[in-house]
Image (cartoon, rainbow, N blue to C red):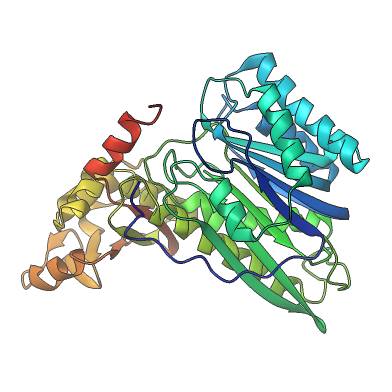
Length: 406
């Protein structure tokens, strides 16, 4: 599969003390690559997570939702090539087997072991391959974060990672994060598998607060194809090895800096997923203003971003703002045709419900030839704003998904 033209190089990412990654081959599919990731976490590691709202979710998601409530973690296992969703009791047994195997190795509770799986839906995770893969990973040499990013991928065309740092008092803390996602991407929590690792000492409750807030403005503001996966998970692990005074809430010294770093990493990751949207040729930012509320603006933005007509127009480099009007009108949110304004690349095509008499499409057409597209929509009703991100819809998306299982 060719690398996305919107790809970004993998960044230099620091190791995180207390988080040791390893990868191995479980051979879930007939491919010549590692497909199982194991990250061992230090005792005392805090955990937070957000999960898919898809009601046909996997056992990994069901168990993970309960595990994060305990606030602690000792290990992460990620399987690629098989989502283990819609697999009944056999799927759950496979997850519980992995949890028990790792727990026995670490001498911890099975609930301290988090498992994620991604890939084809409806095929039970093979227990024998999982057991052998976990054993191989446990005995493997530690690896770099880029190897983790490559191993957790499925239809991804490039490895995705992000990093940020912050000062908590006199202590510098680091965040290193990886993510996978390319198709079946729609904003209904966090439509991908993403993992943040930090050496900061953070209470589980505040870590959850930071991750949930970041998710609302990043992962839940992206879409590739309007489909929400059965396996979506984003987890944050804080090992506490940096030695800072524990962050327990917004009032803790350095809490703002840490929360900003988490948001920064999540924003970077979410954009990378869109840039690897299946078949994508263009990265599209849609800025909505003038809505009755921020949430209303977000819904309008997503209606535009999920419209096949809008996405194909951008793919064809056609400034068809009438399709944007359609998408705004169908969003189910307050809108007034006679107050609506639409622009591309900083050039307004229509203002207050009317095409501009002196509208020059030439600069817009030139803008649409680029890879990074900006769209502005002003509803003219209030102070609500939101920004969402998507990609265009091309023949490549059809080809990838028509051949997905073969």
